[in-house]
Image: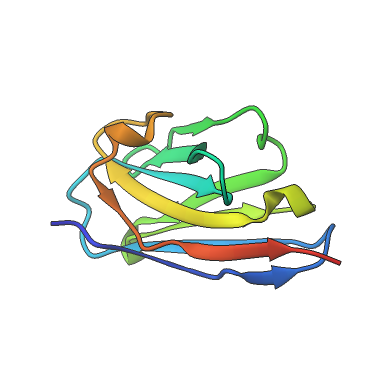
Length: 120
């Protein structure tokens, strides 16, 4: 079973940047996706990346502001978030699956989440 651990959350001010990491115990699946969930809202797809080849899939609402990258040697995927806004406040999760999908149901393994708070 692939285990995922997210790190890097915390509190920042609007306009600042933050990078989250997602480290997998193994690369048993082909893709890693990032999602977030704010209180009272549904889990929202942000971006995904394939381990092999590095193809990416961005949600339009974050493309150009969030950047996904990976380090295969470290089994780690990064989510760089720039120009953060208060509405980016949420719990951020990474998930592993065999395809880059926007639906959370199509991912097999999930991390425990890390909280990001954007506030002045």
